[in-house]
Amino acid sequence: MSITRRIRLGTDLITFFDLSYWGLAAETSYEEWIRIVEADPHHYFERMFDGCVEAGVEGVEFAPPPGGLATALSAYGSAAKLGSALRSRNLTVSSSFTFGAPLIMGAIENPAFRSKADDEIRRHADFLAELGCGLIVLGAVPRASLTEGDPNGIVPRSDLARIAEQIDKLGSAAAPAGVRLALHTDAYSVCSRLEDVCEILANTSPDTVSLCLDAGHVTLDSGDAVEMLRSHVERVPIMHWKDCIGPLNAADLRGPIMDRHAVMLTHFRILGNGIVDWREWQRILRDANWSGWAIAEIDMSPDPIGEVRAGIDFFERELAPIHK
Image (cartoon, rainbow, N blue to C red; front, side):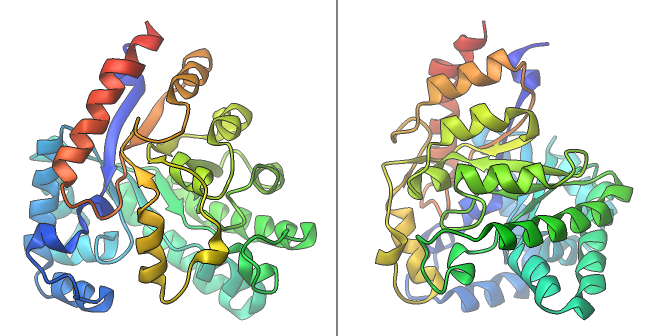
């Protein structure tokens, strides 16, 4: 099997979220951006899908709003029509993101919500199954919500156990559709430090719960993304190939979520332009005979097509030969 067959390249639609790419004013709020897309979702998804083709990827990961699966379904009217739009471009759905904190902590804090959380995951999984996709990328619980507001605090093991139990239940809800959960290693979350990830994975089923390892986020949170891959490569069916120039102390982040996110973006880089040791990363994949999705995710890129291509060029030039 060739390297191109074992490592399938995709991108997350959040790569196309930069306002300037759409000719929108820089001061447009995130909420207004969502309203703009939802007013004419077909236009925006058509251009994003065409951009994926131009960038040279085969996989599409649905993003947070307004690039999520629900908005894509409204753009095309049904999963069947959405699938047809993708197949006409030789694109495949690699995965679909959903926020995990409400589904996890909501159910832990209010047992009456557990069935609703299960239903939400089940519906998501059923639509993905229609599209031939088997992965939901699940966002993580912010660490500060369990450490009295300290984003650098240590999460109690008892809380990790409760979180793992709820994640396992969500994994069971998705399983009948043939869909697995892949926990995203969000910076400053319960899923970005190696010891926390080890605890959660040890207490969830490998048949239904896996890991979406985002090298940029782990590095941003002072972790060693390569060591996390080495420790859990067998639980990683999908990864976000995002680079990072170094750690950023979460205590320095202030203001609304999009303001904090904008600061984080100043540390993220295209594959090969940060401090992640991608050659060792690739050797680990080679030795494990790994296969799966590599998502070139560049949050809100002003040049999404060019920057995704640049990351792919680096992969083909510097990393793919490691497998030969």
